[in-house]
Amino acid sequence: MALSRQSIMSLCAAFGGTVALAALAMSPAAADGTTPGAAAGGCTATAHVDSQWGSGSTGGQIVTVAVANTSAATTTKWTVTWTLGAGQRVVSGWNATISSAGGTATAVNASYNGRLTPGGSTTFGMQLAGTAAAPVLSCDNGATPPTSSAPPPGGPDVTVGEADSQRSITLAVGQTLGVSLGAEYRTPTVNGAALTPVSASGGYPTGQPLAATYRAVAAGQADLTTQSDAPCLHTTPPCTIPVHLWTVHVTVVAASGQTVTVSTADDRSTVRLHVGDTLVVSLPLNYVPPTLSATGVLVQRDSTGGYPTAQPLVTRYLAAAAGTVVVSTVTDTACNHEPMPCPSPQVPWSVTAVVTA
Image (cartoon, rainbow, N blue to C red; front, top):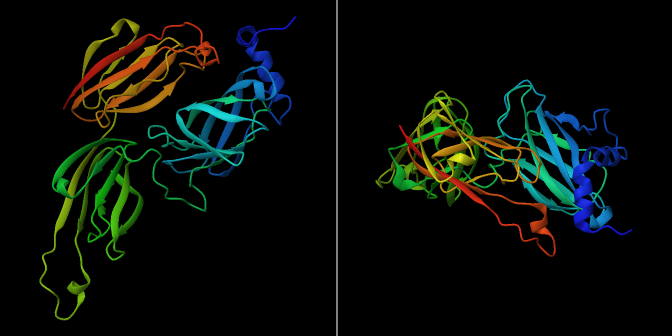
């Protein structure tokens, strides 16, 4: 008797554990049903097939990956790579930026889960089209040579330019600050332990616009300072063109206030927070991870569960700066993504967060 795709997916949900173990049996998996990666890059990445449906190119998988920092230092980024199975492709991912080229997939940390203390860990997940054994992963967090100073995926959380000189900026630990200045400016220097450089390009004397990125690594204060320069200022006698000074004052905050939890009953409500407070969004498993209407006010610290993981959704945010932001999400179901979607209405949910200093 032939089974429809809907029936296969229902059976997969019912017997997900059996299917996952069957897939893992084809790879060098550990006894607990996971496939570990090497720790040569200062971290390990371990894959687990949570569920699987169909077979070959007509099937699919939900895979969760645990990333752990095995180095002796706190790191601020990680990259996981692996080889996709024959005919496999990445459909979607969460808690990481995932791309693929030439059969190799790469996952880079999100802005909120790159920083890991020694022994610390985080997770990301993905939906794959096509089935294969659980992948063997490679992980690198820059803790061992060769190091990398690649900028964070998706760009900085906050960007400042020449007009922002003397401005005061508030960031949360883990956020990134981008600096965009003209080619006449030197790379800014950092005064204070709250910020650390991530990347820099251009600026004097390259003749290219200056672009630099810094990451907030600890609660406290820091100043970014630079000035304009020109070749004629270094001749004898020097020219008399004006030198422009540029400074931005940065305050980095960590979670230290109250925790406010919102759920389905709080739909379309307004919550009031102070900088340093934590907002927890707790919703059923059929909601996708929330999005923010603006950046900088709330910083996502971590997110687990939600569609399509079959686990309750829990997302935590740190109130980083005064302002107003809408946190929103919507329900989803697998049949909405079939060639002939089912008539399943998507239910929106949102709260408005008002943060004061």
